[in-house]
Length: 320
Image 1 (cartoon, rainbow, N blue to C red):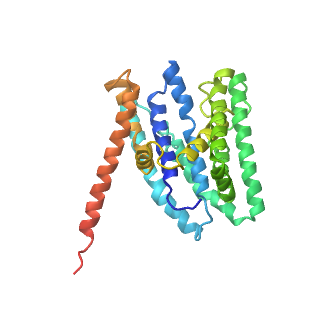
Image 2: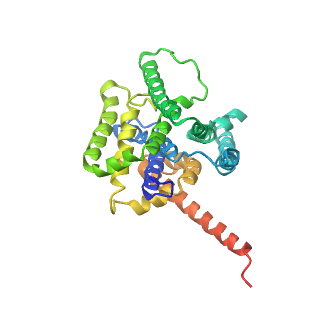
Image 3: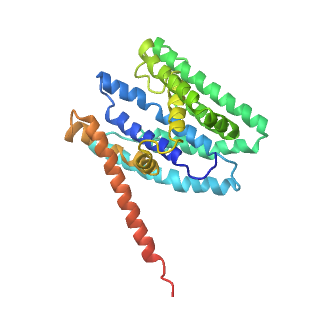
């Protein structure tokens, strides 16, 4: 794989952000369909980290690249985090602190951005290590991630407090990032999977099914990201979708790629619409609320892009 823009990755992100919206509109529901939607939607956060890891590289100028990432991603996120804090303070009286803003706690979904920027700033340092040491570290990240997730599952199931740290926990996510990085380290893996696409597709679908069904069997439904089944479910679905959307003319590719290219804006802004729609304007019709949220975000982003383009064109001097 190359680092140039690839429609398959945009499709994965498009499906991921749609899953995020569905998860948030169906949150709190106790009917079987709502429970199923939330269980299925959990695949997307690990997928986002796998994609982030796949595109990790050794920066030519670490400090400049890091500063650019802060300006382009984390600073805009901080604006949104403050806006959510003010919004919930005015509407439901929820207070917030500076740490809540930095950690992404002013709204339910913003935690991802904190981990995203932490990984973006510090994980590239692994590329300054000898390759064998880096590869060993990536395997350690994967196994430690699985171990922490399993410990969290056991703790919740048996009501024991094994991990006492309640602050940010990068270990809970960095295994998925490491998995993406490992695949990038061994491009022959992609070649081999491409050459044997059908059996791998069947295998990944089976892996996904195991991860999705297992919580129904051992009564861990609702263990949000705190269960070992997250690994087979998210890895299986991510790779199955990657294989399918690497074929010619897969279903919905253009639309999903369009959505995926606007993932960050949708992710940051959609939560302002979720609760008013699902609780007040469209109570009882969460699927329609999710559709309205998605297309409203797309429309706002499209309008913003066109306005900015016109402003740039006006500022650009015409040739003599």
